[in-house]
Structure formats: C-alpha cells, structure tokens
Length: 89
Length: 250
Ligand SMILES: Nc1nc2c(ncn2[C@@H]2O[C@H](COP(=O)(O)OP(=O)(O)O)[C@@H](O)[C@H]2O)c(=O)[nH]1
Ligand SMILES: [Mg+2]
Image 1 (cartoon, chains in turn brown, blue):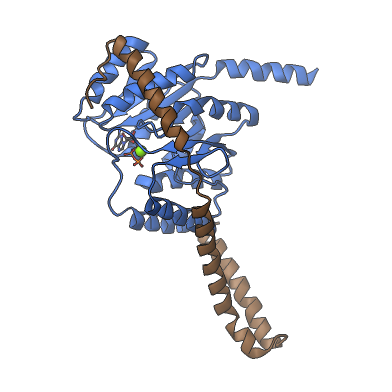
Image 2: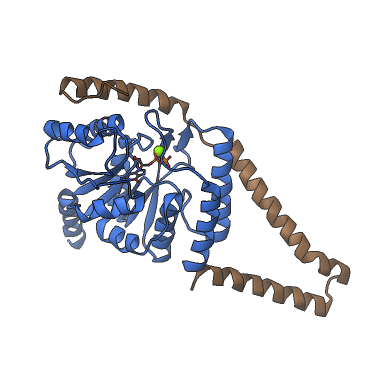
C-alpha cells in the first residue's frame, strides 16, 4: 500500500469519528465543530516543538574537528613521503 | 552441537567478507588522498577495495588516484572514471557494477564521513546480520560540526517533516554514509530515480518499505575542510518535491 493511502485512511478514520461525534452529540456541539481546528493547531505546535527541541539539543562535536585536523596532518606527512602530491590546495 | 557449528560457520563467513567502498569524487584532489590514507589506517585486517568514481574532475583528482594506486596497489584502489559530471546517483550505480565484494560501503570523499567509523559499521552488521547499516548524526555519540543556525534549522525541520509524514523507521534520512549487502543495494538502487539529497532519502525509505533489516550506528559529521560542496541551489524546494514524490510512490 502506498504511504499516502495509509495517511488518507487515517484521515478518513478520524473524520468518521468526528462525524459520529457530531451526530451522537456526546460532547457539546459547538465544541465538536471546533475539534478539527484544535487538532490542526495541536499538530502544528507539535511540529514546531519538535523542531525547537531538536535545535536546542542539536548534537555538536567541536572536538571532532580538532581530531580531524590531526588526522589530516598525519595523512599529509605519510603521503608526501610516498610521493603523492598533497602540496597544493 | 548445532550452535557450535553455527557460530563456526558465522566466523568462517566473516573471514570471507569483502567490502567494496565506493567513493564518488568531483574535484576532490586533496580529500581523496587523505581519505584513502585514513581508510587503510582504520581497516587493517579487513578485506576491502576502494572504488573511486571520478566524473572527469578538472582539478586532476584522477592523477592523484593513480599516484595512490602506486602506493597501495591497483587491486586495492580501483579508478572507474566517467567522462563528465553525471550526478551522484548514477555514480553509485557505476561503481556498483565494478564492485567485487559481498558488501558495499558508500561514503563521501570530503572527509565529512570519517573512515574511523567503518569498523563500527562492519561490527554492527556482523552482530545483527542487518542488510543495511546507516550512519546517523542524531543519536547520542553522533553529531555535526561546522553548521550555522540556518543549516541546523533546515535540517531539523526537514527531519521532523519526513518523520511525521513518512514514518521511515530511521533517524537520519539524508545521511549517506552507509553499508549495504551488495544484493540489497542492487535491488534498492534500481528502483530509485531521485537526485541530490532526496536520493539518499529515497534509498533508505524504499529499503525500509521493502522490509530490509536496517540498523544504525552513530557518526559525527564535520563539514568539509577542503574543496566546495556540489549540491546546492533550491535545495528546500527539491526536498519538498522529493517528500511528496516519496509519499505517493512508496
Ligand atoms: N562522481 C561524482 N561525484 C560527485 C558528484 N557530485 C558530488 N560528488 C561527490 O559526492 C560527495 C558529496 O558531495 P558534496 O558536494 O560534499 O555534497 P554535500 O556534502 O551534500 O554538500 C563528494 O565526495 C563529491 O565529490 C558528481 O556529479 N559525480
Ligand atoms: Mg559534503
């Protein structure tokens, strides 16, 4: 099944629940009408929150860049000795 | 009894493994030399070959590769050039045709993918029997160095969007430091059509949909020191188009 179909199915299921809520009026009607809006806002907030948290916790590795510099020096030394042209650049 | 012979078989198999490391290059004259040295340094008791797919780099990358062949041997470093710049996706396919190993590693030449992680890819594959081991920057032990806030923001946004819409089951979709069983790579790559970043994403999403066993290992990613990035332009738009494409085709 294509993935978009799965997502559509999910949306259809959610709408079905919503419509049945409207008809059975378990919740106050005005409240039920606004439910889709609430869901969209919630989803949006979730997305922004995830991006925000991800950004705050973005894993960085400054020490890796120093280690890489050492590796580069080591590699250049070895290669130069073997006659590989690592001079330019 | 059975378990003993099984583990002995597994041991036997490990010793017979050969890894073909495909490195696409375009103007990576210095980087290719450095990365070859580092691969040999970190894979001392492993049977491997390095396949350099160079797209006619004007900076003389191929000259350097030939010099490296003199040092390390033409059987260990294979130069499989193409006449002109034809893009990354087809570079992998081209390299794959010449691979003689039963496993294939794909990595960038620009030192953002450090060869020191190769042993952990190999170890993870042997431990789990996975079809694909993919490097991830977004778990503990992983990380990125050298990105500005904007770059981080787009990366996070892209990731959250893809995770919510595609449910791919891997944490780092656009990373391209990966180890594949050769047959699996051949299978997956033949069904991929995207370009650029989306290509990496398409590969892993399709593999995941096909039910292949995918494992992750943490890697760190240091932005390139030498040379310049070849991907660019309207990346965000391309990415969104790619996402849409994957939604309707996978
Ligand atoms: N053969 C070949 N290699 C390429 C091409 N474009 C990029 N590459 C290589 O692919 C790797 C990743 O490219 P890079 O420019 O670093 O992309 P970025 O890391 O996403 O910015 C590097 O090793 C490049 O030299 C291409 O058209 N042909
Ligand atoms: Mg790069």
